Length: 178
Image (cartoon, rainbow, N blue to C red; front, top):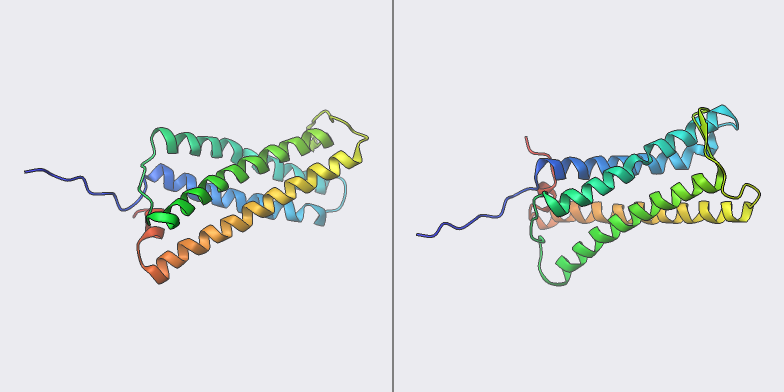
């Protein structure tokens, strides 16, 4: 008699934790980035920007998440076959790419501007007088961050659609187990 291996109903705990931690950090980074200019110039704004940069540790988390997904994380088959399944895989890859690109362009902004970090250290500026370069880099960082947030919102909406309309358990695959 052959026993068959049943597909698990959810991802492993580490994959789930890394997913939700990534989502929270990305949302937090976006909110922090949107609010930097609300702070008065000087120390308050330096601290707000430093917090935004400090939360950029999402890059390390993102790299860990990609590594774990490839070398230890539980791999589940796509919830749907055909075009829908391939689209879901493509969206996940695009989310990773946009997150990585957003952080790398953000790091370039820090270097181009020569940011002061928590009034403890100033990153040497790449080209301090080049306002056009600084402007373009910040615009690109904002474009990448906004695209990432919009795609993440569509990703969340698709998960909710699966949960409430299709009732196929897709959201439960990434939901923490009790």
